[in-house]
Length: 76
Image (cartoon, rainbow, N blue to C red; front, top):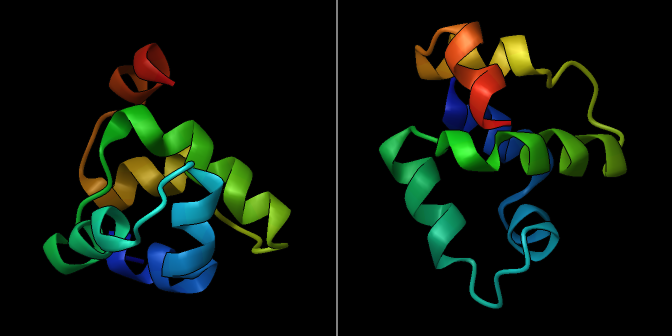
């Protein structure tokens, strides 16, 4: 699963709203780049849970974004 797949599953508009963005362009740009900034991973997981999207975990995000779990845990 790629970062773009994760964003697609949650929904660009829903995720942008959950993150407090008035404009979806920020999340749309993440989807286009195939990258989710690590400082938002906790919020992305919470948005997935709120949307009842299963399987979006810290480990899944780290694997999708090519980061190390220990690195992600320090930020989240």
